[in-house]
Image 1 (cartoon, rainbow, N blue to C red):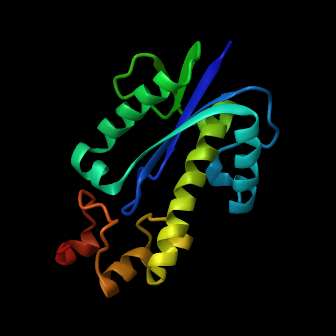
Image 2: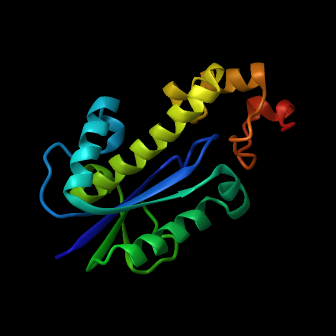
Length: 183
């Protein structure tokens, strides 16, 4: 059976894009697991192996699209795009919802139990990491190479010190930054 696994990266970020990957493995790949449990080096090494041994498609939504459409709408659009791009007999998505797209079956913790979802997790996370490395080169004071846009203490401290950037999501309200919501 041809199975397409789907996962995302950047959903909980306060900066940068949301990435959603779909993967159909063409052969088994050893070492696949939830991308969050892998070192950055191992993730990028596995990304190359996945890209050589799978059909895949990665969808991204910039911070402005996430702000205007909302996360759920972006994720639903991504699932439709992946379904249109990657023919499969079954579509599995990590998490507890399919965002109203009936063709997709949600699998809680699928990124740690289903190889094609693990592969999608790795591709999405590598895409997010690569984006944030680029932003780090442009804005080194924000530490994007470390937190990749997530709302860590260091990231919030950088915003408090240097202000918001055009890549920050305005729809994410963080209590510690409520007085600094001037973009």
